[in-house]
Length: 184
Image (spheres, helix red, strand yellow):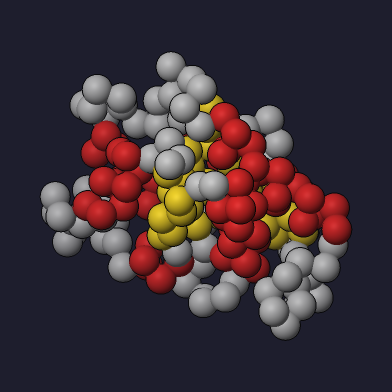
């Protein structure tokens, strides 16, 4: 069984970022992946990494899931042209894997999703996620999804209306599943 950890969202339940991530997760799941999801609500509960309130137990379940993962999906909203502090803080917890035999995200495909009201912020957020993935020794999938979101982007069931955006999100999920376990 291919294990994929999905990480992303905002403090707002049902955000466009979480909806986009859910579509990529669904594509990986249909392909046969087991998904473990850490959403905005979970990330909001994490203390700042290394700051007041941080302990060895903080984020331990997320760190353990990433440690066992064959692939990762990360989604962030574009805040002022970059990733959100919420997502960045959650990614900082991957530092706990620095001394593992397979450190950080070494040898794992990482599918990246950025959502934003504007194309420019979505693209710069996606590029930031790619840079962080490289710094954590992960392998960004060839396709990343930079999705422009408006109140009309998703229907009442959380389905994306834009066929091209749906294809991007599905391909991100499929590429993580398809390349999991292929890297050293």
